Amino acid sequence: MRTPRPLVDEDFDLDLKQKGVDMRIGLDMARLCLRETVRAVVVVTGDSDFVPAFKFVRREGVKVILDPLGHSVRIELKQHADVVIT
Image (tube, rainbow, N blue to C red; front, side):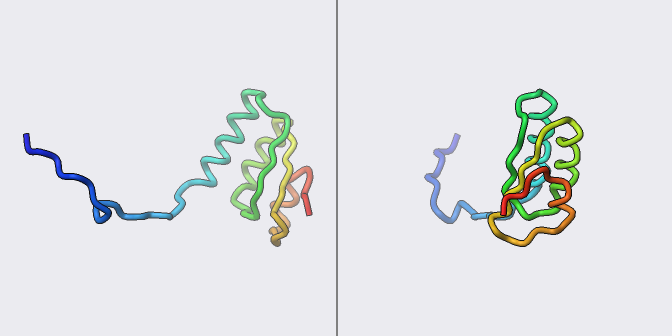
């Protein structure tokens, strides 16, 4: 076997892209509500990609609280939250 060489900065490539994060959060929301682990979820977002997750957990009886941190949010997202913090 050859002796391994030490790692240097050039061996790493910084990749800050987010891939599938919304889906993973939505799956976590679904899993937590199906296990009856939560009675409410607080989601800090303005992304309407969460509408299906909001619909699902609300149908399962979990309250959805939306906090867009003062940013504008599409009406569809607000319509599927029980509480919108302004």
